[in-house]
Length: 137
Image 1 (cartoon, rainbow, N blue to C red):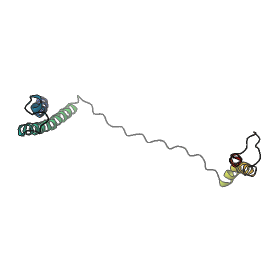
Image 2 (cartoon, rainbow, N blue to C red):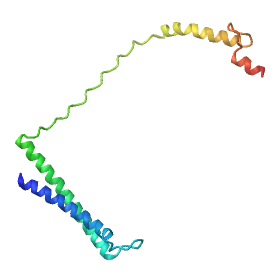
Image 3 (tube, helix red, strand yellow):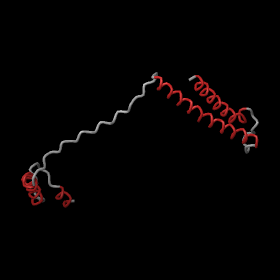
Image 4 (cartoon, rainbow, N blue to C red):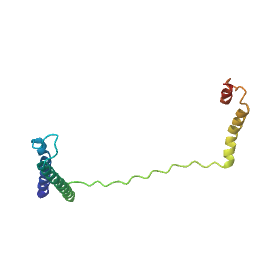
């Protein structure tokens, strides 16, 4: 366990060293402003990038190994994913038969037919139908 912890710390220090190598040419002024990167800057930057990536991969691996060790020792409880409960089906209303539907819609159809036949006359509420208003303009 101690070896894994020391490895994680060393890998984290490698990440920090890699980041320092990447920013050192700019922080220390060896790279002129508004100029192309010099060979030294390119060398230090990409070396630092490689060190940082390798250190990050190492740190991740050591942290995962420490976690696994803690699970084996029983110091960390692994939470099991609970399956998502299946949504309950929505109860479907009983289907109306064609005859029931026709009987429900018959008054509406009659009202629409009557309204279309009386398009030029005034309605009961005193307003003309929309068709009649448009024709009067």
